[in-house]
Image (cartoon, rainbow, N blue to C red; front, side, top):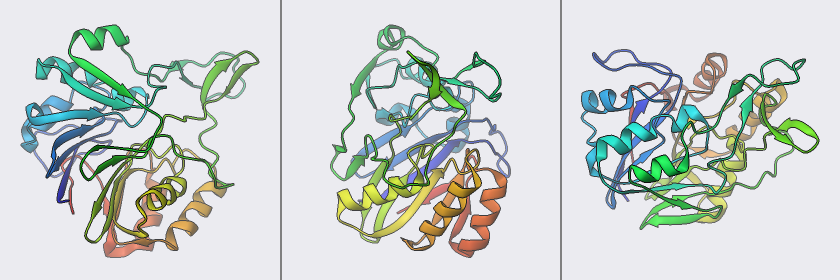
Length: 281
């Protein structure tokens, strides 16, 4: 399959007049089997950026949500209102769970709600047709979603500040709803991450196993190697070195320190993603 992916929302925007930056993530995906939108940012800028970049949101066949966090789902309502028609929204079954971010380990009550900021009924009234699943699946010929990624590495422990409330109190959110897009090409897999909360190594290993392919043409998106511990960061980079990755692009939740390190490792095979970055495969 031929694919073109344009970054519509990211933490950084420079070099293109008229686009805006935002802590969030969204990608306009053009394929032989139609166009799709992965994530919607936190809201307020996705429509403008799409216009400036020439990405026709009215052409999309579906919206894919990588996980429930507001910086990936906050623009969903305005996209639905812009489309003014029904559209399938693909996501994990945990899309509407409540979660919070707690940056202070001494506090008993988390301060910031992290989940999707809309009720399901409101989104459905605007045309959202939710297709929720935990499974690895194809949503169009040659276009796959990982679904729930098995957590197999010992070092990819996630972000301790992402929490949910359970009977025993506040506990770390395992973020089982994290999923990525996988597209097979003649030169290997084209993988688009949301935040890789499941761990970038777990995600890529799972994608390669499911697709029976060990070559990665392109992997880009949020790696979530910024907020995690140093052990996870170093072990993940060590594992990535052993993979057949032709091109690596990072953004959003990777963190500048980690991005610089990866740029040094990958050289001219590295891309620093920002609004307007285009990947083709």
